[in-house]
Image 1 (cartoon, rainbow, N blue to C red):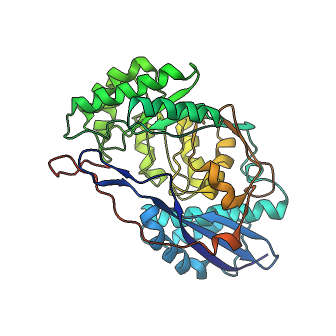
Image 2 (cartoon, one colour):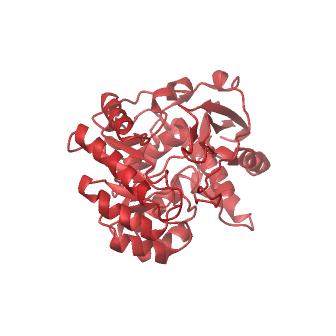
Image 3 (cartoon, helix red, strand yellow):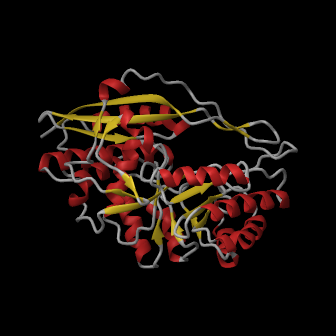
Length: 392
């Protein structure tokens, strides 16, 4: 079998709503996201699909994939790791989200081809699943305590038993105690209306000061959140470890890291409790599993980030199924995934079933996505009331 061609499809997907800062009026979240699907074709009639989404990264990743087509065409797709490593060995530059995302798309598409060629799901190729269901969580809204509580109840009706929101987004300056009060009130309202086993997750987007994150953690701890995600700006392990030591809520982080070498010092020092690599950005399944295996020695659990659409999600599910030290998987957009791919997954009791179809277990609606429009995303504004940059 030989690779004959690659194709890319980039398109814009509407989100539920555009989000603006309540104080400055600046845009925090766009009304749409951009996705990028990769198709690898072979002379055996077997095709593989991967995803290289990343909102503003999409044009750069697409250009990279098209440049790399000469390194794929006429290659045997079945030795997946050898093909991927050969491409990386030819690059003098290592790391970064563009290269990591492009390679992740190729890695997934090659595994999809291998699974289809051998008639087995990808998780069989990866060593066999150690779970039949994957625990998941979805995104929630924390605008007001009432909205937060109503949203949590809606998520329960959809089959979810865990929800993540973005606390401290209302802060007007770096040590805004009112933002802590507001966020704690929203989380308290959720806890009052959900069963005790319902998990509440907190994502501060890597933008608060360590001191504000510690204070927030202390005050929200009685409501038993599962973890506090990205409580400090990216770059300082010392700051991360200070919050981890002082926080009564376990700390999770990792979506802004891309290579095993970036994760290694964090694992060696056990700088947090949970790791959140994004399979769509961290060079794919192969690198994710290497990170997870190394983290297992430090008894750290994996809670993968999701930065894309249905293909990156199913790649995550296949990987979660074979990860012994897996905790929980981020999920968003599941209710609309069938617009873009055919699948047999169902969310029930806070979990999703692991598909057993050959390959990744989904069929892309190629004719439909080929018709979808694409538009460049506007860059968000994320500022304090005085105009200074908040973070993220």
